[in-house]
Length: 153
Image (cartoon, rainbow, N blue to C red; front, side, top):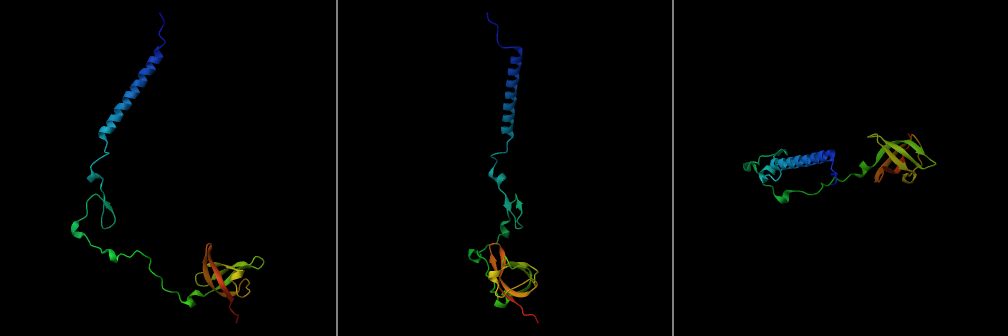
């Protein structure tokens, strides 16, 4: 008769494995029994009050306001037309590189530094010159155009 191949250690490991599997099944059943999933619809509904806060109480129907759909505007408001004199700004050339053809102008009103290129200049400019200019929006930001020297008095 052949000797059994199962040793005491193998039997103990098998018992532990079965015990863990049984405990896992019991925990799974306990979670299913105590689960809140699939609760009633009333438990899942949330309301927004007049102040924009989320609550679980429904709003008071006596405070309901009726809004006409025609009164809702779904567009941006038009800006007032800018006067041509508002477009012209004054500033001082803070930096200008003649060899590369670009520089910066510091706006007198808001102290903003605005890029200027030689192509946007009507008069030849140098550093510390007082100038008038207009701006245009470019992909990299504001750029000065129509740059003219202010005559020195």
